[in-house]
Image (tube, rainbow, N blue to C red; front, side, top):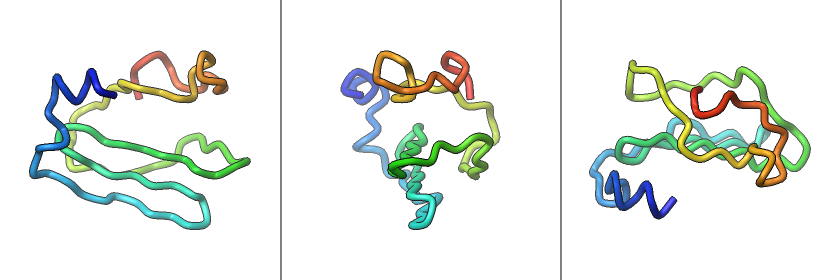
Length: 82
């Protein structure tokens, strides 16, 4: 995350927007700078095809995915492309 911060300057960007706060699903989605952060805090549920809206119309790319096997995840995403 520090690498991407140095490259993109996310924390000093004036663009910030909370896209989703869902207590039941334990999901938080927010935009900051050029990035979209998606957090799933649910202790049991993993979501497929969870739709979210963003400020951008262009395709998105995954920079950091804690669902990767090396982080103890289930590797459900396809290698950097959302």
